[in-house]
Amino acid sequence: MLADIKGLNEECGVFGIWGHPDAAQLTYYGLHSLQHRGQEGAGIVVTNGERLRTHKGSGLVNEVFGKGELENLIGHGAIGHVRYSTAGGNELANVQPLLFRSQTSSLALAHNGNLVNANALKHQLESQGSIFQTTSDTEVLAHLIKRSSYTTLKEKVQNALTMLKGAYAFLVMTEKEMMVALDPNGLRPLSLGILGDAYVVASETCAFDVVGATYVRDVQPGELLIINEDGLKVDSFSTSVQRSMCSMEYIYFSRPDSNIEGINVHAARKSLGKKMFEEAPVEADVVTGVPDSSISAAIGYAEASGIPYEIGLIKNRYVGRTFIQPSQELRELGVKMKLSPVRGIVEGKRVVMVDDSIVRGTTSRRIVKMLRAAGATEVHVRITAPPIAHPCYYGIDTSERAELIASKYSVEEIREIIGADSLSFISVEGLMEGIGRSNAEPNCGQCLACFTGRYPTEIYPDTVLPYEKELV
Ligand code: SF4
Image 1 (cartoon, rainbow, N blue to C red):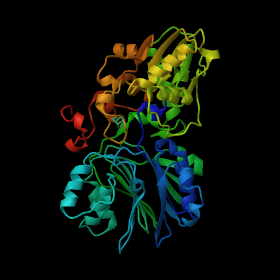
Image 2 (cartoon, protein in one colour; image 1 turned 180 degrees about the horizontal axis):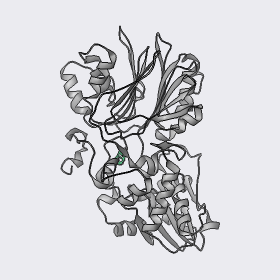
Image 3 (cartoon, rainbow, N blue to C red; image 1 turned 60 degrees about the vertical axis):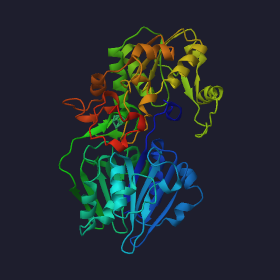
Image 4 (cartoon, rainbow, N blue to C red; image 1 turned 135 degrees about the vertical axis):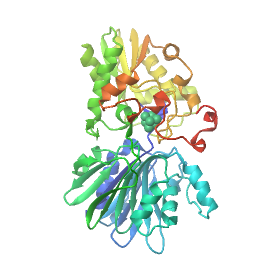
């Protein structure tokens, strides 16, 4: 699936390391492997024990750190961030980590997720005299920490975290230590690893493989890890926890070589493909997946059905990220530039096209059209996510509800709109079984809110888009 033309984007990825002389360089490589989680900005803050130094900018990791900037980032601890901007806009000030300097100690913050009560907290803090430097929801945590009446930094951070609602994987760093916190619902993945004597944390385990770190465990909801010269201490800030891991991490966002709570993402997608076949078999000549994230599911569908898997669509990796599409014709051309059918494979064939989601429907329609133009006699679309009918408030840009095709149309109507011969979405039950997390009931253990509308946290009025106000 092609995120930038489909309208489904991850918000961020975080990476942190403590106790390594090449902390900034390793963070650079870690961020590189998390690049799929955000391409609009990147940054690193490093500490040498005395001072925090930073460099950040707009663009890809290798663009931001392309001119020797890492050479100035010397220290044994670092946190880094890649950003896709949904909350707060795309100005440089919002690129993370955010760094706040004060007389006593500085504070750097990197955040993956989205706070649902950020506006309410901002109003409250502004009425108490806080002045915000950014429009990012992340800055709220810095103000809450600074304003806390507790004595130690650990207590201040714990106290501040109890006031936040929503999705957050936070890395907090001062000159002397790094703290790692995950929201009580554990909506976003966050893992802990070791590299020699150093501790490493990352949004996805694929970053550990790149830097040579060994996975230790996933960070638990409500947990606060404190890492400093004394080593790692495990504490918490909430005992009222209920894991609600984002299902879309398995379906689409995470890299196939990452494991989320012990489940490999490629294996989960393959299993979703198998489930998809069980739920919606069809007679066809060839199975193909929309690259890259649907390839694993297409292989699963092919294996279960006995229909051969083929590469029927090719992704062009060298198309610029910011292709401007001012007209319908150019938008069509944009999709053609990004994705091409393999005529020799699909011509004269009945094709099963496996994709991971339908957001607005426009991309699916174009791909179906493309396959038919390349000679496919039938196109059967199989989607390994249930219909996305509700917006996400937890850091995934799933568009406004008004733009979500499944919020307005039935499956049969969507089939007609995208021009497929048949269309099936995986069921919520099939999704849960396919991923393989043990769920006693919906929303226990796994967030399904964009499919079911049942949100694992309270949704505050000010997180709701204007159009949504009467609907939630
Ligand atoms: S609402 Fe959907 S995209 Fe958002 S966290 Fe839940 S499962 Fe993930």
